[in-house]
Length: 202
Image (cartoon, rainbow, N blue to C red; front, side):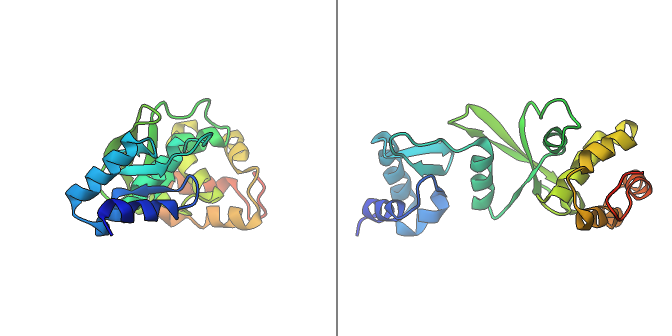
């Protein structure tokens, strides 16, 4: 079976809207033949190139992937995971007036990078950060902690905390208090002083 045929067969078996990377099909032939096959499929409009090395099967009326979906697929291609940036988490919780004006996601490790999302015409940034900032990953507690961390000590007060934690349940409030060893001292002191185990703000 030729490289092009093998790639087409692989793509046809993918669910609609599932993004795949060049890395996933490299075993079907040499890098040159794989790149050439993907290029032809994009030219034939059977594939949509989302970003360098990222594609999705194209069909009439399809819903285009979001920036977050493209970013997640790009990170996955390099065995990484994306996490909501502090400002976006704060906006989601209603304690910031606007999200980040850039598409920024936290990633594990020490290397910061970026790529262009062709379908959105935006550059997506992967900001390397310490593992402790990724506490509770993308769960609600993690988003609250990253949002408060992003605001900084000068903007924290009981009203902000109440708004940020209003939807947390008892177990999540407990997790928030127990996260003290993972966060800066000022944030640990603030949350421990202001939050009770029952999920109420003093």
